[in-house]
Amino acid sequence: MAARFLMLCASSLLFFLAAVSSSSPTNEYHSDEKKVFDVRNYRARGDGRWDNAYAFTQAWNEACQWSGGKSTVYIPLGTFYLSQVTFSGPCKSSITFIIKGTLSAPRDPNVIKQEEWIIFKYVDYLTVTGGGLLDGQGSYSWPLNDCNKNPNCRALAMNMGFAFVRSSRINGLRSINSKMGHFNLYSVEDFNITGVTVTAPGDSPNTDGIKIGRSKDMHIFNVTIGTGDDCIAILDGNTNLDISNVRCGPGHGISVGSLGRYKDEKNVEGLTVRDSVFNGTTDGLRIKTWAKSISQISVSNFLYDNIQMINVGNPIVIDQQYCPHGQCDSSGEYNSHVQIKDVKYSRIWGNSTSKEALKMQCSKTFPCQDVELSNINLSYSGLDGLATALCENVGGSVRGKIVPDDCRI
Image 1 (cartoon, one colour):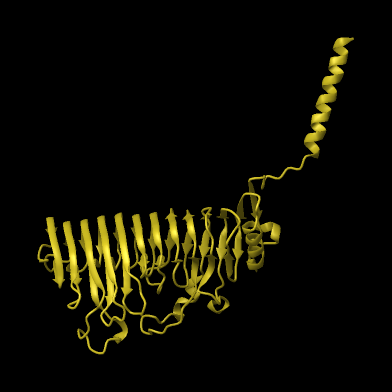
Image 2 (cartoon, helix red, strand yellow):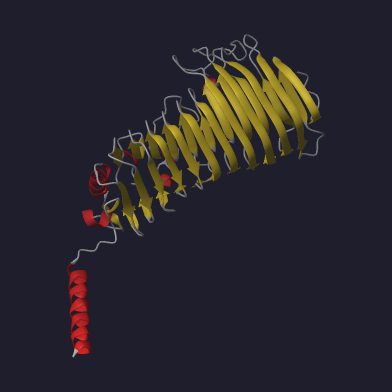
């Protein structure tokens, strides 16, 4: 009798637990601490044709204002066409933006009315990740770009921008065929870029890989960039940038500048570029300032260390006579007002496709100061002699073995 009673109790308990389990709401996307906002729930379509700008914006707005904990915007596999979109904060908490599929830009550049096709603004603790693809469809716009001969050329949209964003990161994205630059960063702070791949043809105009202005405390690590302009372009007002493990090529290398062209520019202080490879680029490590400069600023506290050059046109360049498109009245008449100082080149090695493998043309008015060359070994891949160096208005020191060795500083 007792055994039968226990069996009945056990059966009743199992039935009760099953009923509770089946009646409890389950959602694989959210809990009290984290919620995922899938763009498909806002009528996004991954068919490559439907404009998903409204759906993406709605998903972002709800995720950004979610006050129950961390939030995630989720873009699944598929091709999601976007005319243009702005993701604005501030947000209630940290937010993750996961891109698994492909985001496809308009072919017609006139559709995009803002500087970046996709932009994040006024957001803290943002992560953009997922391994997805940004396709700028730039090949349809490149024939319209005449910036190589027109200083007032039309600005086309960059693939993705970040403005006034802090304590954030990009990880594992791929960006191809931007109309102009790929990633544009302005006034960001404590920002990391890792595992990013940027691809555009070597002859695509003004398709900078990563462009940085007025930012500080940035880390760029383990990126692969092949494009038609600078792999990384560092503009005025940047402080404390650490760049390492970059594979650059094709492209124009890692460039600081051009600087000094406009009023109210800011100093560039604290740049490290290390453990990187330049392959088939027109330039390697380049600093360029306008000869006919308006602002008087400084470039200081730079370290370039352990860099390999493979068939690079100009491995080491300081050009303070930069003045493209004939914008100086007379060549050589002007002297840049940008002061370059405390720049160290250490363990730079490989080969140059131009005979002048090391070229430093500093300003007569503001000569370069405290430039240090240490263990430089650059050969010339041509058949008409050995590599040479040109150094003008440069003060500093030389340590270890230097090839070419005809640079007296």
